[in-house]
Length: 347
Image (cartoon, rainbow, N blue to C red; front, side, top):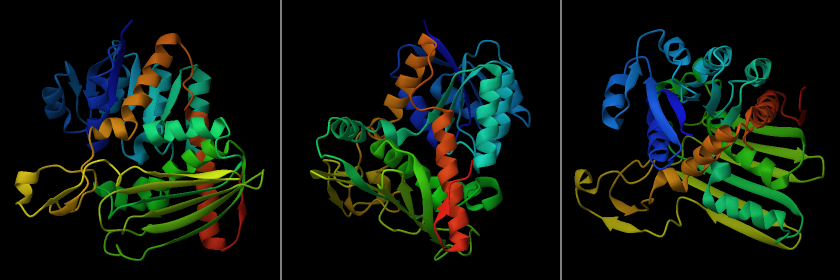
């Protein structure tokens, strides 16, 4: 059986998704839809159908050939897209974060449950090969009881204008990147979060946004464990993604973007160097190119798992229930930004 996929969106992340689908034999992308760039995207990737215009979401969601809709849209369109997909009985993959806030996330979970469609929350970092290996080691007790997970994701700001608009995105560096580290940490600790302490401020990009461009969040779990997420839209040097996992009998360190196995020093013109890595600011000096980014970042493995799950008629292991919990924690962190104290998680 081949699962027929329709893609909503044609931006940066859609490229990683298409590179992945090209290596998943039981998936076929049959349509793409976006407000204005679907024609070029479809031509470049050899996709048979495309939809454009103000009603591009409605058009793709009602396409009878499509089995699964992969939503790779700006955050403010997630709720509408999910509701239309569910109403049309389409199984759904959605890029992170699930919602701009917990209210939206819960509405989306209610929609997929109401119409009985399968749903996948595309948290790619859970599927990063190194992270997957670490999770297996932690489950097997390789470092004893995990009591502290510290994560950092940083770069000098997002690539699309809508990210900077707090009304459209729902938040700044915390929502954009903290959703990754919060979910990976939640799975490593394998517990229930109880309260959150957060700090966030606008330190650098005052000319671009009203959202926080730097944030630190501490998440306390019922077993006494601590998750620590540091995120920045103001750190030079390209994408920096690291995890430190501390246990009663050891520790594990993961550096996804610096210890890539490739180091380059160049003074050649940037046009001769070409693409280096996501969020690279320059292509001169010391560079750390990443081999097969779509694989190293976990996109290939998450989408392969989602397609296999849908083919079997099963709910993927990363789904809207997980996305709701991430939004629940982030909402508490934003409340803590204002109250300057530990905030409990809301229902």
